[in-house]
Image 1 (cartoon, one colour):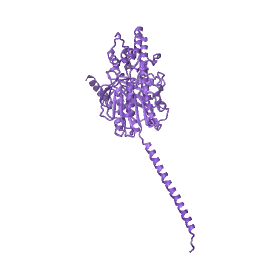
Image 2 (cartoon, helix red, strand yellow; image 1 turned 45 degrees about the vertical axis):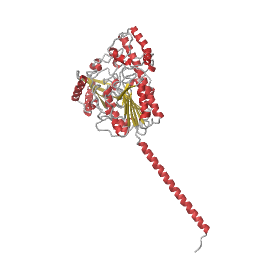
Image 3 (cartoon, rainbow, N blue to C red; image 1 turned 180 degrees about the horizontal axis):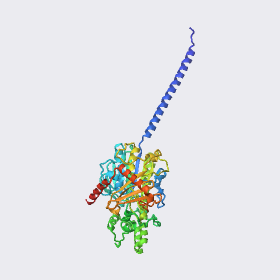
Image 4 (cartoon, rainbow, N blue to C red; image 1 turned 90 degrees about the vertical axis):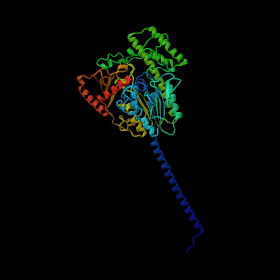
Length: 549
């Protein structure tokens, strides 16, 4: 056998070692690559399933006309507009019952008033029933409610609550923090914002997704502005809507209202004409005196410096008739819009906090109101009617992960839909008895089919503002309303030809086929939502009983 030189053996061994090293290196690199890929996949999968935070902002009686993003030119709301420009604006957001407490009950439960039991501002709300906050809380969300809810009893479904009792007060308001009542110094809108920011920064568990209901009192009556905005609109002369001097022809229920700016708006309670001489005597003067008395001496000085000259000028002018009506309208608009400016400031503070703390990308932000409001349309203030200005509500939504900036939604959405939408985003099962629908697919562009009609019911009569009980249906173009109880009248509107709802065409033969189809659609919705004349009677009896006792 031929002997192999030792040096050759060394070379072979070195070469083998080299090859083995290369093989091992390639193998190890493969393991690292696979490990990194698995880590990336896990990270991507985890990110896909990171549940969004939810900040649900609701103001009280904020008309969509008074948000500059809607283009009516009354005021400027740059922070609220940010939600629209960075997300979506809804042009057809509506409520199911245009009055404060019932609207909020619908928002929480996802069920119509006749189902959740809160049909008016008088009957108690049953907190023991399910609401979307309870469902999110059970699924691991940190939950908080701050500001106005206008539903008696300790809120259920929240780890933390700090809410106004009843309607709340504008100056130095009382709050109920986790069941304990305390007074805060300052202006209610700013105080509410401070409480919300304090919870976000100091009280929540930072490793959990959160739900924050951040609900403002403003711009609810009596429209008391913050001192820094007293003079914001002092030089602006507002032009009233074209139907400000409505004669209500062909609309019996509307004609019997008690919510006219000229006829019913209280000079002291609503328009701040609390003269030191006590010469302006009105029905609700003492009620407003109580609100004024909540101010401290510094707050009163600023208030008097602004309002005393207005009071003096008013007394000297001795206005009557149309001149008085227009003066009242302008004073109303100036105060109402001034309170909204503070709401907009608060929205800006919350948006800035989320951005500064890296939370904006994974947080759903919704801005809405508990209903719309009349800003002189039909000569009115307040809400309640199924006519557009109170039936329709502002709705803006931002969620960078799914909603493209500048999205416009024209479908018919209601406050009934908030509960299932939030549950949908959180990956929580939507109970079968929830009557609303998630509009997540609308805003992310994945859903093309949507409802073609919405249902409405108002129950608080006899009651304040004298708005008759009624229910109705609205489609893309038409609206059918039935006023009942002590009257029995029907109204039909062609919203394309008559957007201001001045001409009831129910008996117009040209609309006979439309009338038949709208009645059919109304009955379909009443069946779908389990409403009926017999249930209306039950709710009426409950309302009258609650009012008496």
